[in-house]
Image (cartoon, rainbow, N blue to C red):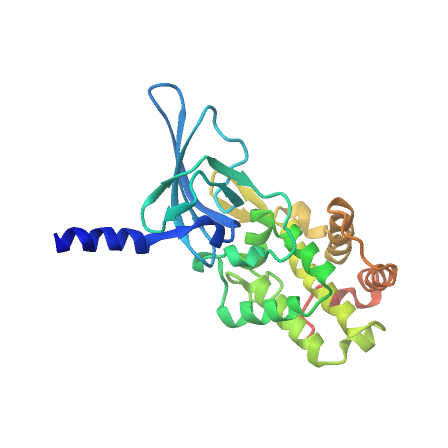
Length: 274
């Protein structure tokens, strides 16, 4: 009798109300099988900094655009779910926009993270920026392939950082150098403006890389070596501002445009400032 009570109590402790969960997750993995009655049975694992949850649901057709690593919301069927058992849900919805107070960085499990000290430093710098810049960056990095490239690809311009996460490390170091030094004076701009510019250069490097479906890896095609990274960085930011309807101050847009188009200092902006 006591043993049964313990089992019941363990089950109660394992339950959590869905209203207490941040419904912004990253899709860790999923499988899909065709059932005997021609429905699709999905099993998935999703993650955020509150929980790692197993889910299952049926769908009448295969879901297009459901990729491993995508940011999603769960369509719950119950008010409570099990933290360690598989939960039946209505399905998943891919996230197209980040709401106020939400952060895609809450969805990153250990396998996504670069070195922790660099990651913490980057988040510190980002969170000190104008809220509209933070919102823009989150929407740009909402694409899982863009985010993966930013966090994981090498920095090919230096043998010291030509390894996994090298690009992210160089970007963070550049931001740190700008925050402490006087490089903004050389660019004749505000320190905060140059900070945004070097960050966007690091993020824009994803445009150099393409994904090889057969080899399951990223690579840089020869034709991309001639791309102007500083121009791509500016275009990426300004186009995202229009796409997601996040208005930036005209003065900030002008200042950033001047930095991105500074041909005399282009080599510094796209390289290492130290």
